[in-house]
Length: 101
Image (cartoon, rainbow, N blue to C red; front, side, top):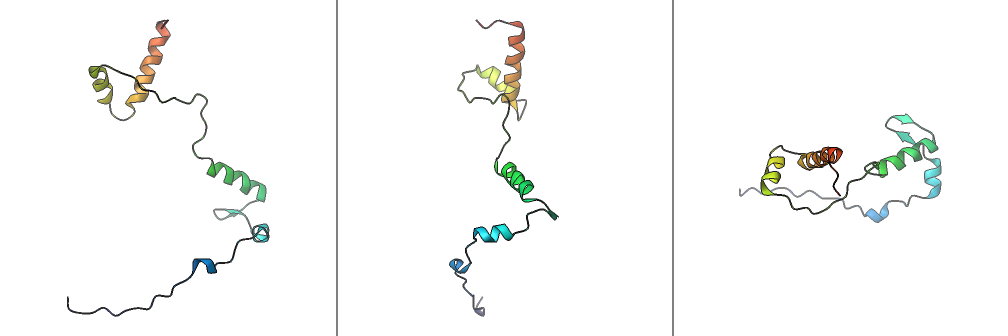
């Protein structure tokens, strides 16, 4: 452990030295998706889709607090991942044959 490591000179690059990207730069750029050259309109559509995140759903779920009996909770949780979805489906099935009002 007494051996000394030789120092290597590190070249510091100031991130502010990078040129600013201008509108002209983007106008002259060749839009590509992967290895394929595409039109600017196609690139814009693809970029919008990529940045959008999770696609919207027809009927989004709402987070709520609900109190369930411990045995009911244990039974559904024992079925593994997705147990909340199965609780939702069980309630949906119950509504087909019962009137909650």
